[in-house]
Length: 179
Image (tube, rainbow, N blue to C red; front, side, top):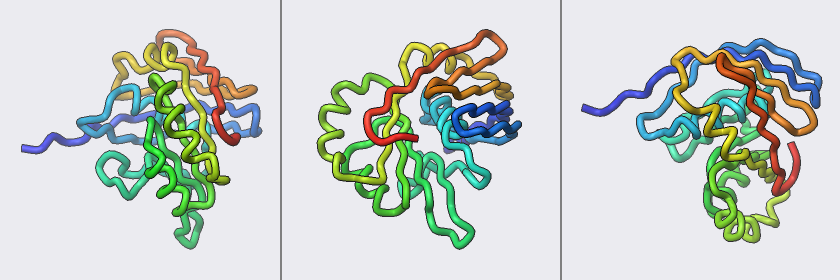
């Protein structure tokens, strides 16, 4: 019997000071059986970082032809394709051809990945890459409840996440482009 995705109910109290967005967002996110807590947390943070009204979660791990998140126009063109993790240069090139804007929220030990991947994608003008710091991401991702209630404030490129336990500060490092 195949394992089923686990649904999580997420409430984000989003305060994006940099863009002037203040929303209370309720979403349901499915966690694929092979997805780590860090990756799911990165997807939620990417949702808040690039929030727009029609931003939606893709099938991601279940379907390689879809991103972690995307924003489509009313005529179904992909305006913004968002990946999380450490995709290779071929994947980033493939994704950049399918959308007007491509963003990546990378996490983990990115030093080796960046040294191999960044030179190969330097010519992609629609690509933006931000890196999450590992320790605060790990602390945020530990033992996620099925009902997640976070306050997410974004100010000067730093994500401040308040959960039931504490406040986490995640300063983004931009490797290419900008938000």
